[in-house]
Length: 614
Image 1: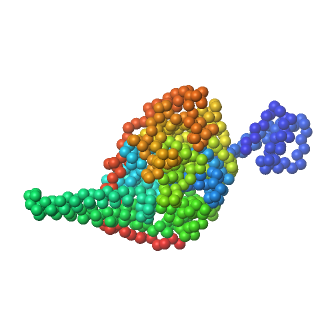
Image 2: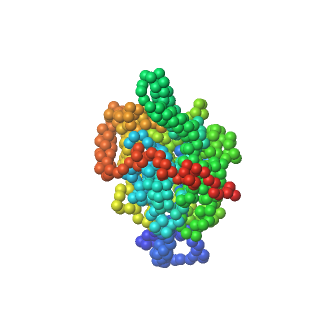
Image 3: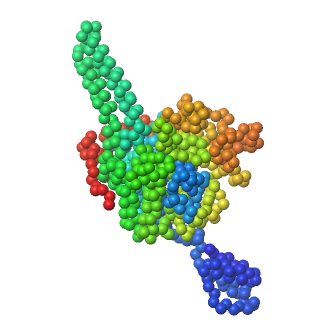
C-alpha cells in the first residue's frame, strides 16, 4: 500500500507511524521532538513513495496465465455459487482466495460460438462463427468451417510478447480448409505453441450413448432412403417381370445396390462417427483414433504437469479446456457412484478434483504467486440432456433456461473466478456485468501487449474492477445472440444501480409450461418455434434475477424510457457489424472425406501411438 502523507499536518505523524508499522516498517527507539515532526513526516512520505504499490506491481509484472474452462457446466453446480449438495472444494477454494464474478455471461449459449468469442474478445457474429439455418456448432471434424485465419486470438498476441502458449483439451473451432493436412483452423495456427487434446468435442456419439447428437438422426435418414430405394427396386423388378414396364435390368440393379449400400452405411454410421470425430492429437499428429476414454483424464493431467515443468522459467499462457462435463460424462472408476447426483454429479466432482491436481502442480513448481488463474464454463448447463427419468445435464440454479437458449440467463450465466495471490483481494465478490470476452483484453494488457485497433473488440479490461480501483464494469450494454439473431440485450443503468434485460425473441418451451425444449437437443433460434415479442419483454435483473416477473408500462414507470434506450443501443451496435461468411452454415458444416483427419489410409482411421500414462 502506498502511504500519502500530508506535509502540512505534522500532528498526523502518529497516524503515519501506525500505518508504517502495519506495512512492516519498524522504528527502534524513535525519539522525535515536536519541532521535527513535520520534517520527519515529509521524509517518510518521500521514502514510502519509493516503495511499489499494488497497482504498480501489476503494471510492471508479466504473470503466468492459467485459464480453466469447463464444458456445459451449470453455474448452480458449484458450491461457491450456492450448491450445497455437490462437492467442489477446489473450485470453492479458488473463490475463497480470489475474486468471484456473479454477473459473468458468455457471448453464446453453445460451445463453438462461445469459445470463438472467448478467444477473440468479439461477438461470434463478427467472426462468422454462427449459423442462420440451425447448425449451431461445428458438426464434423472433417468440415471446412472454423475460426477464420484473419481473427486474432489472445494466444497469438501473447506468443508475440514472448509467452509460451499451450492448449490442452477441447478445441471445437475447426481444423482444415482444403485438405486433410492444411490445418488452417488448428490451434497452432491461432497462436498456440502446443496443443494436446480433441480437435472436435466430446459427444454422446463418441460412446454410442442413448443421447445422440447426430448418429440416431443419420441412421433414421439412411434407413428411410434405404426403404425408398428398396421399394423402387422391387417395383421396377415386378413391373419388368409381369411386362408392365419395358426397361432394362440396369435401373433395377443400381437401385438394389444403392439400397444395400444405404443399409450397410446405416449399420456402420455409429462406428464411422467414433473414428471421424472422437480422437486425440498432439500438435499436428493424431495419437489415438478413436480415443480410449479411461486414458483421457490421466493423459490431460500428465500433459498439464509436463507443460508447467517445461515452461516454468518463462512466462506462459496455458488454456486447459476440460472435456468434462459434456455427455457422455466419461468418469474414471474412482469417482463413479460417489456423488449425490448420479453420473453427472460424479463427473462434476471428478473435474473439481482435476482442478485441484492442476493447482497442486502449479504449487509444486513454485508458480502459484506468479500465476493468474481463471475458472469458468463455456455456457450454461443442458436441461434437455434427459433420458427416461435421469438428468445428464447441469443445474443453472435460480436462472431460467439453459444451454442453447440465446437470451435466458440459464444459458449464458457462467461462473467466473480469478485468483492471483498477493495482487487480487481474497474473497472479493463483484456483481457488475462482465463477459467471457473480457478475458481477451485483460490477459493481453497484463502480458504487455496491445489490444488490436483494426477491429471492434467487445471485451473490456477487467483488471481495474478486479483490483477494486474501478467502481463499475465498463459494460453498459451487452447483446445476447442465438445464431446470427439478436434475442436479448441488457443495460446496466449505473446511476440507478439497475440491471435491465430486454428480450426480443424467446423460444417456445415444449411441452407447454416446461422450462426447456424437451424432445429436442436444444431450443431453436428462429422459425415457428420462437416468439417475436412486440413490445419486447422487460425484466429488472437486479430485483428479479430469475426473470420470473415481466414488467409492463403499468408496473414499471420507466418502461418506455428503458425500451427506447436499449433499442438505441442495439441500433448503434448493429451499425458496427460487417458482413462476413458464416462458418457454420451448410457449406462450411458438411462432412468432406478429403478433409477427414486419419492416422492411416482413409478410411482405415485407427491408431494408438502412445503408451498409457504413468
